[in-house]
Length: 375
Ligand SMILES: Cc1ncc(COP(=O)(O)O)c(C=O)c1O
Image (cartoon, rainbow, N blue to C red):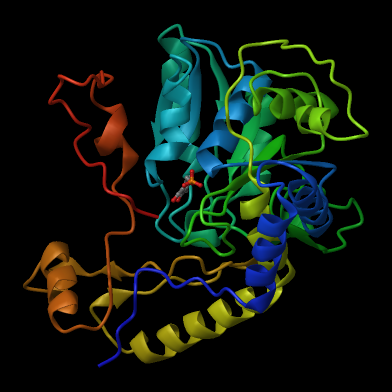
């Protein structure tokens, strides 16, 4: 019987040797390897700036902070996503405006976004940003997102946790050429800030980690400063020969910096990102071939002008053709020892946003209803 685990990182000799080299160097925290990882990531994604941090959640938080999100403002987020996409909005006392997804790729339904935005504004609240999340690693409607954002003056922060790498055609989104030429663009091209996850089960991993990418100098500076206690630029260099002992704390920042140990893994994972991608594409094609004739399933498919990262292969059940429900299907797969299947997403509207904010305290027994880790 085939046993498919929840995730299986593919770590080779290069990752292991680079970690050993880091340990032997004595420089464990943010330093030269993090810098190298940032530079190579910027080149791979064709972005001007990259800020390496310790999670995608941290990257999303820093992105909204750099844009100046205020308490009371609305931010459009998809309902079908992991909790992090919406929870970072709550960090500011702002409100996630939850939008439904479309069935063809499970990405944000922009017609619903338009409706929810109008309702929010009609109730007297400002909406200042939108966070598209590319479900499973397939880029959503970026031309539509760009157009919506342009009409309503919204900043765009992409949650690209599933997308290293994913691509879209230029004619179909930002960066489209007026002569109609088609060009494959990496995820993030043309938006304000794009955030990636290197959590253990992601397309490339550093165990825990994330990256915020932007072409905007001011956003980059602010995110870098706020990622390390609000200390003025290149804080890590203050302990090196080329750095200065002098620094200023310009704002109350966070402790989100990536360590060199994590970056050592990331450097080599990134260099193999295309190879790992090809392997996932082959596996997705195999699933599609093997499951194609199962009438009870709706399989994911690659949309026109998209290259899917295949971080997730999310199947949908035709419940009207089954006499068991989703939970029973998952349970039976587990009992038959085939796969560690799990629900694709606890809609984050159920998990955290349709209920009043949960106040976490040591004595409180209140817990957010479904804190299951999902995508
Ligand atoms: C869509 C999405 N956004 C954000 C995150 C958070 O990533 P991290 O664990 O790196 O903070 C995840 C993690 O699974 C995710 O699936």
